[in-house]
Length: 106
Image (cartoon, rainbow, N blue to C red; front, side):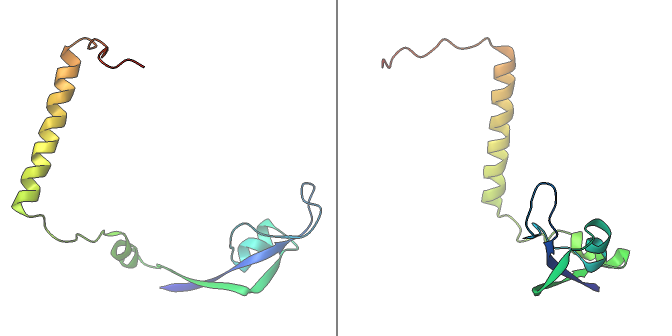
């Protein structure tokens, strides 16, 4: 893993902001030098981020944690919910809009 330093920078005055102001996001020194010439890092805001260098490291970071397996009861409940959703959508596709409920008056 490659470690990269990020800082909040004091941005120079611009057309929109007349006074120097802190950047709204952290940047590397290189990025700030290219995009915002004259920006000065706030050294106390230093943050070290680890970036993957190889494909292996990237894959290790992106594979989601599987977690615990569901119990048979949870599987059955999930299947019931999914089948209920499917039945409702089929019923709605085949029927016209139901009549409005007039039992409650305001």
